[in-house]
Amino acid sequence: MKPTTLVFPLRADGAVLLGRKRRGFGADKWNGFGGKVQAEETLRACAVRELMEETGLTAEAADLTWCGELQFSFVESPEQDHPARIYLLRRFTGEPQLTDEMEPRWFAPDEVPYAQMWAADRYWLPRILAGERIAGEIVFGADDTVQECRLRRIEELDVAAP
Image 1: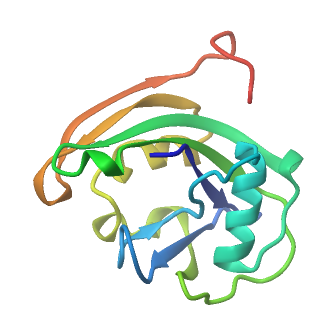
Image 2 (image 1 turned 90 degrees about the vertical axis):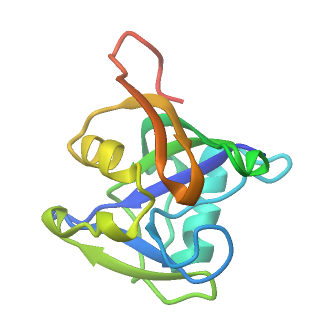
Image 3 (image 1 turned 180 degrees about the horizontal axis):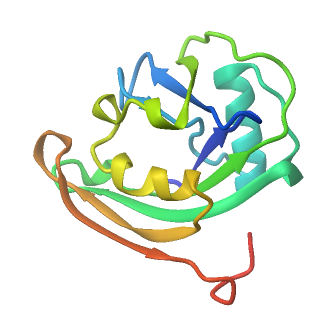
């Protein structure tokens, strides 16, 4: 599968914007906003485009804060395997709007609905929301259970922010 992006907008009060997927892969789960990179598109351009399509929010690629790289693998559906670049976003314009694909909603950090998200999100998302940069691989088994979750902190000297 093509590389993907995930964007997590943050308000000044620390609330994170998540979207409940209304259709397709991951339907009814809360998640960040993003999707597949199109031909001739950079990962940052993809993140900005997907955010606009899924929430109505506009942002500049330069305002995305790179915070991680994850490889998602699916034992029973290898066609769904994909790498994801993860960004936080503190500067954007507009108000989140319901779209055909996503139902956006703000959550306080202690109210993030991990029970209604991908099972591995509870392992990596709190770390990113706390300001950590991470890399790793997550392998999903049957029924979206986490079969493996290998995460590591990315140190300043590991890599330049893409």
